[in-house]
Each structure stands twice: as C-alpha cells, then as structure tokens.
Length: 323
Image 1: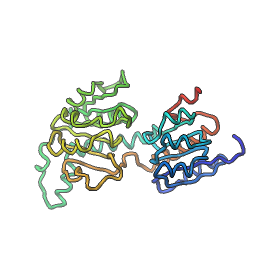
Image 2: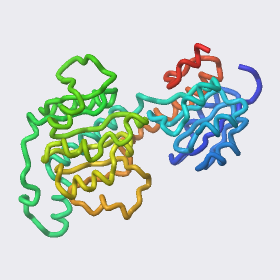
Image 3: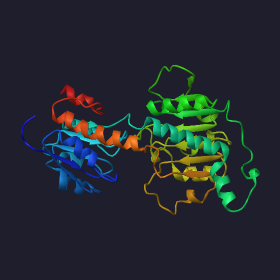
Image 4: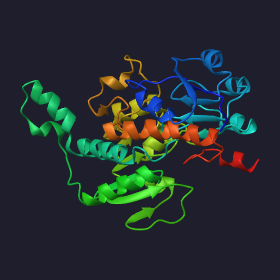
C-alpha cells in the first residue's frame, strides 16, 4: 500500500459511535469521516472521491456508483445489501463486502424468543395482567410445543441455528430454500406450498431480492394453518403488511411477530399496531454488545483488505476478482 492517505467515508451509522472502526483504521494511513447521508445526492457530495466506503442504510444506487471516481470497496454493516446496486458496482470493478456471520446467535435466539412468545401468548397475558385481568383463558387455545412444526423460509446460517435451537425445544423442523438441495440432521426439506400448509410457525430467513419481495402475501397467508404464526427477523418487505393485517384481523392465521417492517421507523398509524395478535420489536434481533463489536470490526477490516489488494472475508460480487 502506498504512502498516500486513503479517504474512507462512513455514509451513515446509527450506532452510538464509530470508535471501533477508527481504531481498526489506525493500522493504515487513512482519513475517516462519519457522515449522515440519506439521499443519493448526500452520498455523492461526500464520497465521490473516496477510496473506500462503509455504508448502513444510505442508498448506493447506480447513479451514486457512477459518480465514484476512485472507490475500490463498499463495505456494508450487516448481511443484507439490498440498498446497494451490486450490478453497477461490479461493472465498475468495485468490491461489495458484507458481514454474513456476525449475528447468527443473536438473530436465531430472537427468532426463537418470538416463536415461544407466540406459542405461549406471553405479550397478551402481560398486557392483561397490567390491566388487572388475571385470567389465563384469554389466550386459549394454547398447544404443547413439543411435536409442533417450525418451518424455515430460507436455510442459511441463521436459519440452521434456529433449527438447532427449535429441535432442543422438541419442535419438528421443515425448511424451504430453492438453493439448497441437501441437508444434514433432522431438518426436512419441503417445497414452499408444503411449508405454508404444514408449519405451525413460519420463521423467515431470506435476503430481500426482487425474487423474495412480498413472498408472503394474501395467497400465501391464506394457505397457512389457522392456528399458525408468522415470524420475521429478516427484511420487512418480504411480507406484504396490508395483506398481513387482513390475515390477522380475519384470523386466516393466529398471529405474527415482526422484528422488521416494510418502513423503518414505521408509520405509527399502521393498522397492524392495533391488533392484539401481533408482536413487534424494533429491528433489534441482530444486537448484542459482542455482535456490535464484531460487526464494526469486520466491516472496517474488509475495506483494509481490498485497499491492500486482498480479498475480504466476504464479497457479495466476488466475480470482480476475476476481472
């Protein structure tokens, strides 16, 4: 690496600080700035001459990428890269890196927590007790979890960890993933229709793509069992919220638990918030103190690797290395 100071731009970050990243970048000759980008124009204004970009939510569109004059790497905080135009970056030979393995334990535990909360009616019972209503029949009928079926939509690292934890509670586990043909252990692969019709709990663990957007709409929700629950700790737009509201209101399904929503922060007038059979958490499933540190460290290290002419731990568009 040359003596030239590398310009690193963090387009946006809702973490309490970027001290960890700055510490990592002390190992190279770099100038690191934290910005508050919300639009394409914001990103272009501060990062057009950046050597490396770290990104969270700001849009890294084709327009932005075409305006980058020196950028070699865009490293995103997290697993999903749906706010980055991967094709445009690849065409410009820019590496897009992510961190696919930093919160496997956290998200899988959160998904299991939501499954169990649904299974035992915990949030409704808590609310009613606070209203001085001491009556367990409010949540009838409840069913024994042992032997019930957890269905996984997507079978990546996190979903496999959910399966491991669900099996520990005595659940049976089935999974649908068109990109997985074999699986070891006690997971049974099924087609999507079978998943919808068989599972007592469906937990979503797929990336947001044009293919997966609105995977759960009216047609899919009507196929689910009337006593089943939908859990989403992946990406909000995999579920059509208007259809989900109707499904919950009309009791096509028993309930839902969402850690992610189509719009974040959500519109507080969203009718889903009026329903007793829905649970919400504020996109926290990824979080622990350990996962925060790991995420920030690995995101910065990916930038350093590419600037040094090496491959990062994870590149979404690894084909750039063949160019």
